[in-house]
Length: 128
Image 1 (cartoon, rainbow, N blue to C red):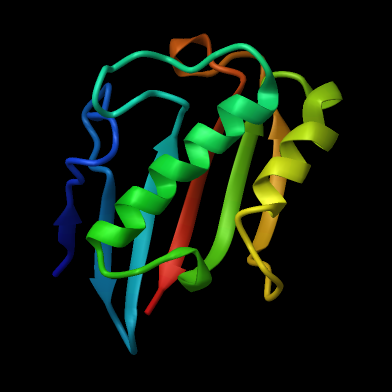
Image 2 (image 1 turned 135 degrees about the horizontal axis):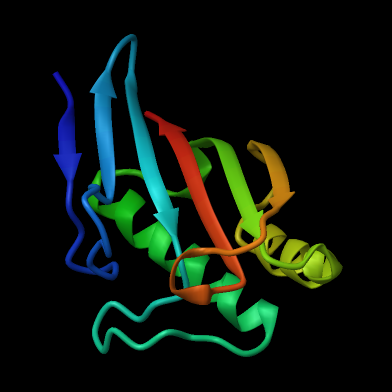
């Protein structure tokens, strides 16, 4: 059985999905839905420069992990969707600042459009 994780510290989902699902199997796997740069308290989108946007996204991911009893050290896989790959360097710098070695596996892809017209969306898989 899966355990649905709903965080009061991350923005409410904008569609029919959960913040995350934990799946027990030789450890607990947590599948975190893609997060965007939306403030959980105000509902305001944090748009503008890619570093600010990426920082907010990673804070939202971290909040969901915390509510599942995990943190970024538990992340084994990340998927990053970007509207413009020309912003990769700045996004990568901010993303990397949230980890200290033992980085998760990752792919980054450019897409034509993201929900709420944001510039970056990140989902992760974590294991405890």
